[in-house]
Length: 272
Image (cartoon, helix red, strand yellow):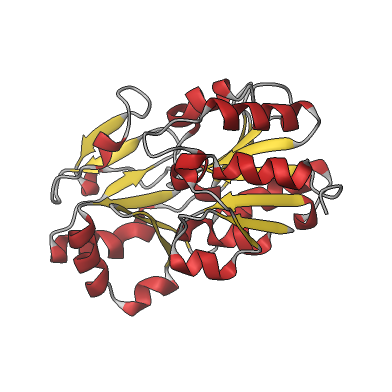
């Protein structure tokens, strides 16, 4: 099997990162060794590349032909020069029905283009900005009506306490699933993407770039927004701490969780 694996794609929160948002020295060394041996190591995240640059640098993924999947698949970026291999977003008007829903249930909403985030001032104040270290993503306070419809927007984000987010989603009309790919990426965050968008989409473009297919891919994840890439990969690995629905679809479940080097232990066993 592992002679066929040419690329390892890794989710961050709950997977590669510990609970305190770090990559352990052990996991770092295992991934560096595989990368040095010619295996592509690709970070897959809902965040923009600047928000995870410290992890890219830590793993030395800054050479020619090193890439990152960002915005849950909507943008594939070459790390060393920020060149865009693939990009796809929605127009602002595609989020009109979601904005109207947020108004109705008094929910917060942030709208992201490929450069910055808009905290919508005509809605309940959002906690999304507090999920980032200062300076890694620019936030603009803006009324929804004043945002340009000329730009592309990879996603909207609803960020609130887990209990309130549960309440909002319970009231979300069923037809919303016909307009958005809706994923609960963290207990406090739900993301609304284009219907056909997830990490699998970005990875398909990256694999095609190298002349490979999904049989050459191993993926690691723990949450709902990892489901597409876990199902599609030749080897889909779910963390021991993964959500129950993720454990059900895994080809492999790690013996250790994200706080105990689950990724590294499995990779050392698999690639020995």
